[in-house]
Length: 361
Image 1 (tube, rainbow, N blue to C red):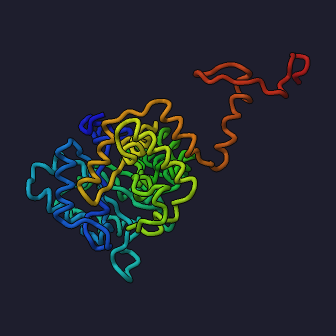
Image 2 (image 1 turned 120 degrees about the vertical axis):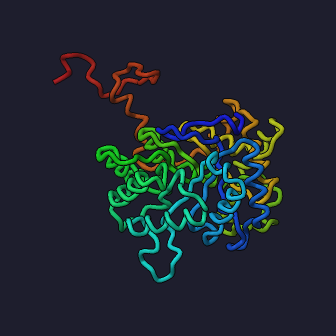
């Protein structure tokens, strides 16, 4: 699928590219990011290839990521309206101020104004709640976001890194109260992080949310840089975020990625991204890059098609252990269908099923 074959995000009319450019690496304030020039080159290449979806946050590189994006688009004002710019609120940038972050009305309104200033724009296309703020009623958050939509300062609402039950509560309240609904869910999702398949991704499908996975390469672990052969020889820029996951299971997944990449004449990162993008709940996968060559490696995911055999092999080596009742759910047809097939799903007979009318009370 080419990068300029756009899709609608969740239950909305917002058209986004199937890959989204994550910009947590824009700026060097955290010690491992890109210079302004490198960041602008990455933005330029992404847009040239047809990408239109850009993701940032108020807290990324102390706010510099938003500034870099704002300055870039300010050079050619017409380009801003053709881009879909998403940013996030919740991170507190003000030491000693309890209202400097969080998901309360005071914090949200202030954070939105500050992001608009840094991004040098009149509106934010998609505004994410970055995490769940357990100390703020979700109805207060959703009403404040609805007010920002009505004021024209944001266009759409998304939720990131929040339990499925809380997202469902927020979406239900929005629908019943006539507030702007949530259209997207941002969660970590990769061959190394599949536990979201227990509750979060099924909830997203049911609630009409487009999933935009972050860290689809698990911080570079699945990029192809780390292999069984060079184990322990490379320094990880992201530290324990990488080294803690270089386990035997991870190397087994990497081995399979490298094998499939060889068959398809591509790279491991592209295969890992193509797998994430193939998942039924996924709308647009967030990719990150510190250099242009890394961006190009990631964009190669758009040029490959994984076969059923490839998908089955990757599923086998990465199959997760999900929380209850995910493991119990496959038994439902046996209890509910009486040995029939419903919507293409067959069932076996429950051994304790009454075998005749006489046995049934």
